Structure formats: structure tokens, C-alpha cells
Length: 257
Image (cartoon, rainbow, N blue to C red):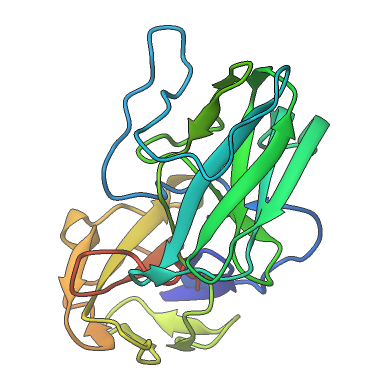
């Protein structure tokens, strides 16, 4: 009986264990299926579903009939410099991404951005690009979907701080496309810069006959390898590895095998 691994971008797949290469193309949610919880602290939406503006000091006062959006982006607690931020009138998470009237800006050396001269009204997307990748995160903490933002005439909207994470964690074992025995499975990855610890999860594709082993869900590892001490039922699985710094911030995006 064997387990088949397939590597994919965003989480380790065990299909019998599986891994596929990352796709390219248009804007993509940070985990290739769900937008990430970009911030550690949750932001509670208003009763109407809009995300409230936070505190802040205006860099510039909006002109009459216009609004501004102000915020900050970080990576590993440091300013994320030169990343693109978009405010979108409409947003389709699984289809076209940003749509309608769209406003853009880039972060400065302090990781701060200012989107100027926005038409007042409701907007469905506020996204921050993950450096030079096709991926982005929502500039809203604790929310796992696009949210609504109310831009008011003559006011500045202060967005929650956004904490980026990358998708460049490199898994070295099992190899992509390899079949492995259901027992004695060892998962390895390269050490990630500034990582303090990792968390891994092994998710089963029950349609393939795989069975979830809850001892392998969201487990902390201080090194870069883990040996599964219980056998897996033959089938397809998704293994997820996430990296965290000393402040419990997630750094790179999870990768699949």
C-alpha cells in the first residue's frame, strides 16, 4: 500500500501524498482558495457588513467630493516597501478579482500608503500585493473574504495594518509526484529566514479513501523535519506547513506537497 505526494502552491498534498507546481496568471488569493487572515488582531465588521475605519492622523485632507484611504503594510514586523495596494469598487474572489472603478497606490519606505481622490461610496475590495508575486492579501484582519468599505465624502478611511506573508517555503521531501509507503513518512523543508517555529497539518481527501489523522493537524515543530509516527490510510492527502516568527506572525505562505 502506498501514499502519493503531489506538490502544489499553498499547502502539502498527501495523496497516497501529492505536490503540484504553483500556477501563474492573474491576481490570486493568498492561499489559492481562501484569502488569508492578514492580521493577527481581528477587526469586527459593522452591523451592515462594512469594516470600520480605525484611528489615525491624516497625511492630507481630502478635497470636497473625494475621500482618501490610508494604511500600512508589514512583513516580519518591518515595513513592506513598494508594494501595490488596490481599492476596488467590485470584487470577485474566485473569478475576476478587482472590478469597476479601481484606485491604486504603493507603500513608501515606512510601509505606508495613501490612496487619494477616491469617489465616495461602498467598495468591495482593498488588497495588498505580496511583493512581486501574483498573490495578494486582503487589508482586513480576521476576515476570510473580501469585505465592504464605506468611503465618506471629505474623510480619510484608515485601514487595518496588513501583515504580508510569502509563498516561497521550499519543501524538499517527499519529492513531487513520488509514491511513498503509508508508514515511516518524513516531511522536510528548507529553513526559512527569521522563522522561530513551524506548524504542519495533514488533511485527507476522503473521496480517495484517505482518513484524517487528527494528531497531524496544526502541530508545532521547532525544526525543519517531521516524521509521521502513525501510518496513513492509503489515499490522497494535503499537507500544510506554515512558518512563524517570534511574535507568532506567519511569514511565508503554506506550500503543498
